[in-house]
Length: 240
Image (cartoon, rainbow, N blue to C red; front, top):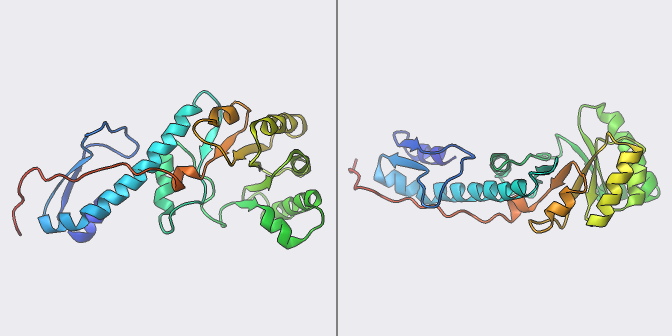
């Protein structure tokens, strides 16, 4: 994206990269060298640095979480809590940090949440969870992953009976998630479990050691700090 920013202004600008996406860069390290028309370079400077800093911040934040749970068989997932218009780039940055992408939108995966169940008015919450999962599985015939969000162990039991691909344990604490994993292992071990909500770098190990398959974190994209990059002129460029 840095290259494309400058190429949009002047196709003759030459960019030589010193690192590739996902590489570790030491402080004060050089990412690339740029040569060409000075006016075009200065026009593109801030936009290019904004992209680089934002996406590198997401990759770095993701890597911190991935490194924290490296001893466990758990995948770190992003969410749809991305900057409008930049989802593809921000999810790419998550992958470069060692994380994995959750769904991109409403088109590539079914995620049944509280609002869907309330709108459909299919009876009690536990009954509705079972019915909506069945409807989704019948509608898509294994073409799409079907995931359902639950908030307690009673809802988990209902969900496990109808074989969703993934069950999201939403805002459940460490103790509840340990019980949820044991329940899943006893009743339907093929269903994957995803922990989500109130998870950070300080407590993520507790959730990872519970035995969940995924941990999803909106913080990877909505709370990542930008990395500070600068463009420094090393010698005077010729006017064109």
